[in-house]
Image (cartoon, rainbow, N blue to C red; front, side):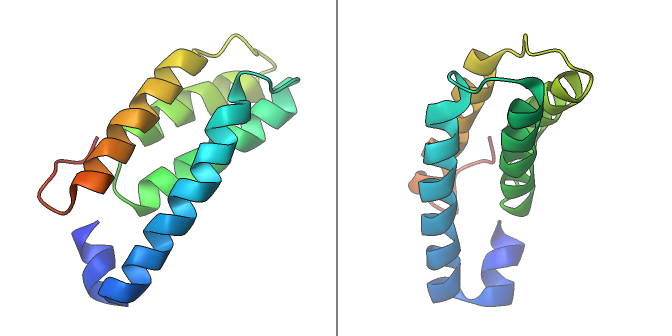
Length: 102
């Protein structure tokens, strides 16, 4: 996260964070309503990529695990774990640069 901040600058970083939170909140809100493995896989893929870009390794890992299951046709993904991991990541992001990556 610090690397991204230094590469693009504080103002652009704030914009990236705002976009991430807005888009991720929308995807997280629909995860429990997502019907079908392909849609679930796509949503988790999006979240994984965003999490990796911001350095949220645990959140990305939870998304990747679910994405792999959905890719295999299994929709019994632990959405609660993904959502919980997202909330922890979001709290760390909002807390600022001194917070540890969730």
